[in-house]
Image (tube, rainbow, N blue to C red; front, side):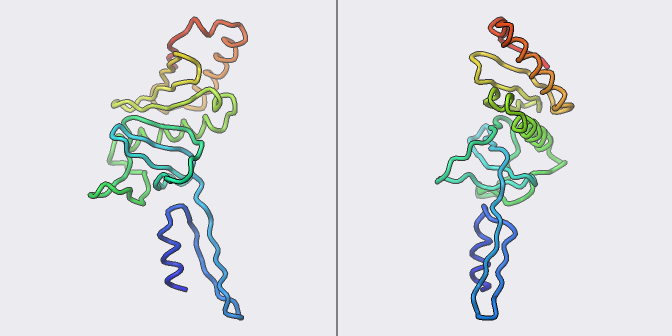
Length: 178
């Protein structure tokens, strides 16, 4: 039982694992699958998934998950050998960690809105910690700035885009600064 539990705990896609033994001697295994909410890819090509608790875990080579994509100057926790550490991304000592968390919040807010989720293709964090959104609409760059008031910024952006699409004036814009 202990060996099985140890083996299951090595799987980064499982959490809350427990094994119980019935009176008949049968094992009952219980586990939950982690729920990734965003995919991070930093400037070196390192990537990871982040769950609802801001825990980083590796990207599967077998399965593709359709998640909001965050790229750029990101904090992805790795150990000395370059392997992903199973640690919480929250690290107040690192400036990039704060902007990574901000970008994750923006991605979460976008994923909760079906219109914005359909329009935004990528969230990019620059060296200053500011965010740009890239849309599926050709050539439109949205300068988001920092993650402060992200919900309000997204509401304003959505209202602008809906109006511009309805009035057929969106093609006049190549950059929107929030």
